[in-house]
Amino acid sequence: MIVLDTNVVSEFTRSKPDDAVLTWYDRHDTSSLYLCGPVVMEMAYGAERFLRKTGSERFVRVLERLLNDEFQNRILDFVYPAPVLAGKMRARREDVGRPLSVVDAMIAAICMAHDATLATRNLRDFDGLDLAVVNPFEAGA
Image (cartoon, rainbow, N blue to C red; front, side):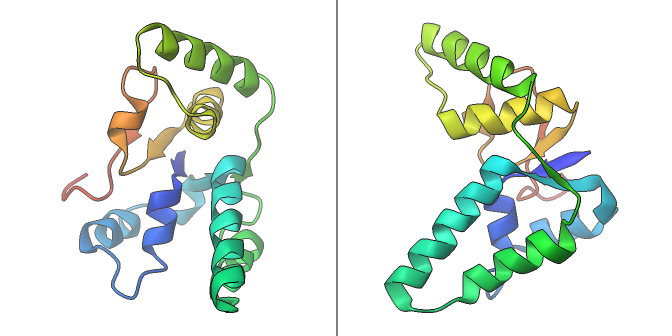
């Protein structure tokens, strides 16, 4: 099971998505790819901001398609034990002077609770966590 971070999902909305990401995506069975609640929240936030700024529903429609078609029944929620894991991770990272954002902690905890790998460009954000990560933006990932 692989959970896609926001930066991976949003790559597909670009007019020319990164070739390494496309290759990486094509190598995986889509039924093994998931979203999680915090990623959906970030995408909804971006879509709403774009709509308010431009009047275009482009990203609102993209999000609806992702939720209702491509990832239907493959969206992981922030439910126990993920909230406990997220709280512990944030406290541990704070103690070592590397604060972890609430959203990143939620994403990491959901992955850990489901024994999933996180696909993200932002590997540094998740350093030092007991979390499997992969960067689809790197050739051969």
